[in-house]
Length: 326
Ligand code: GLU
Ligand code: ZN
Image (tube, rainbow, N blue to C red; front, side, top):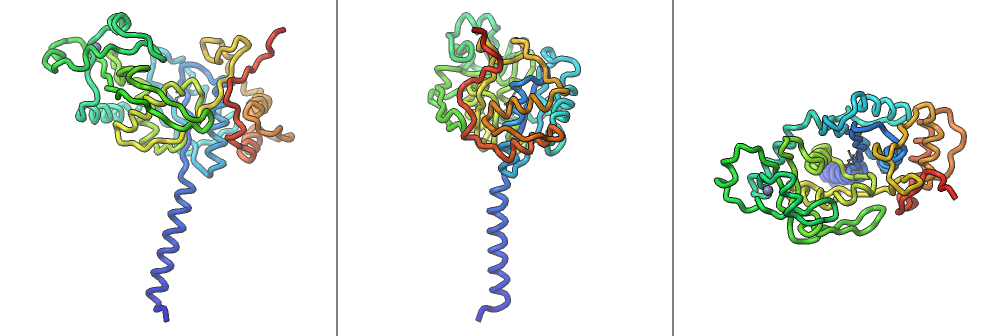
């Protein structure tokens, strides 16, 4: 006969197992990370909707992070405008909005860890020297490693403030993207030792994004294909810092009639909150979500997007949002 204690133990094990399975299923944290260097446009809306729908269909959390690390490029009032626009379009995020400008300590700590493991080095080269002595890579110049092996006493006497670069391996970094499939990049050949802290003391996007995604427990990153080229660098930093690697899905770019990505430079019109409904319907169309019925408010369109979301239906290729003149 099973005693009372055995029965309780069985129950405890069962409950623990259920809890673990439930927690694993629930463990999805996604995010949307705009930079206040411009206002949100149709391309940003596509990223917001897709990351939101993917998170919510997985029963996951969805965070908003303001990537305000480059004050000279920021536009006054853009951060507040972005938040207001997201609200007007019916988005609801979990937790408060995190601002990168408040997180310098975390980036400093991460750089300290990399220094203590000899994974980074100070670089005293001027921009002109880097350009003149490097060769063309896939995302700018590949640094010639002039400072990589300077003895510290040679490097240090300078009163000049150095940039900090990470040493990259002479191997390919590969990952499986949820939309574009397998992607690989040879960091040493195509990118080179890249900067984490600039000489003007601004943190590089590559470091900040990796630290924040890890510290916020982000498990799934859904963002535009313009950032695909950065992902191997970010995966390499995650490995250096001992962070888990999130799942990635890179969305097709929305382009104008000249095939250029919509951005501040190509004069993307800012999202008009008065047109939230038609703009959401337009974006749902690009994501191949079936047409939604009449709704009362923008939020209902987001609920529709969540209900009908299928990552497999998202196109891989860029989508033109304008009529192409004949
Ligand atoms: N802040 C970046 C941007 O606006 C996005 C960063 C990311 O999603 O990793 O382009
Ligand atoms: Zn250098």
